[in-house]
Image (cartoon, rainbow, N blue to C red; front, side, top):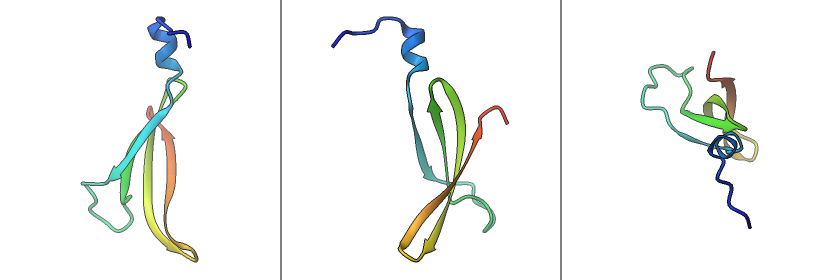
Length: 68
């Protein structure tokens, strides 16, 4: 496997993110989880709400560009 030494190309091809508990949750409508996501060099804000459904608990997500 060849190593890519072009830093700019490497940065723009990275995809990943995280979601963690929201330490600043002051109302029931605020997301229970917050995080960031990067896809092909584009940054996004992620908000998640822990919910219960027919098959158990899940996290419903909202994703917005970080610039908004």
